[in-house]
Amino acid sequence: MHEFRTLLAKFLRETNWTQQHLAGQLDADQATVSRWLSGRVQMGGQTLQKLLALVPEERRSELLEAYLRDQIPAGFEYLVDLKPVGEDAARLKPAVSTEPEFPKSIEPELKRRLVFFTKLAMGSPEVRKLLDVIYKLATRGK
Image (tube, rainbow, N blue to C red; front, top):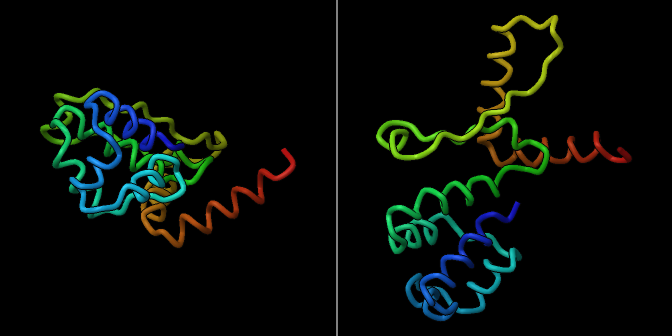
């Protein structure tokens, strides 16, 4: 978690941009940028779009991937596979996919459907919150 804020801070250091400079570029205030970098607040989608337009093209995919990975509830990372598709697939190294382990008695087609359903369900913020609560309850005391 918090890959995005780490990459954003690294980008600011490498470009010698201050928080104030980035805030000006994104029509935000310096305190908001500080909260993004500390992880207290997540950057919104429209602001992320502005940020990606500012950074060099070769850095966009790593920032976007880090932002998306930070949206995945802890413990459910293995359910999401962020692989580039289309033209991006040729120039980016593919993500490593870790499929969940199922009992051997489950048929391959059922496994495929379960993974598909889970990825689909994870697209809903309400479902993600519910799954995060269930995971925390299930792993409590382990």
